[in-house]
Image (tube, rainbow, N blue to C red):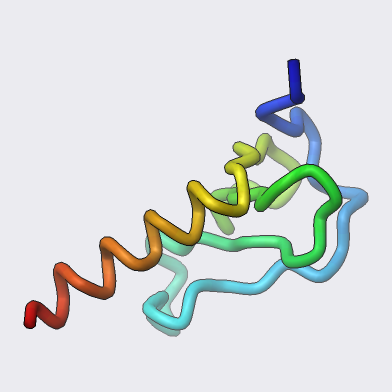
Length: 73
């Protein structure tokens, strides 16, 4: 079974914030591209904390659903 979380993300570099995150220190989601086993996602307020790992297909579906919710046809 594939690992679905990373307990300590402090050693991983290359995190990027969501383009929808504000410039304040509020709720921000960060993702890490090119991770070998999926798409890690973490809360930017806890950079040493855990990250959940989503499958690439699952993450793509989630992002597409959000885009569709914000821009219905």
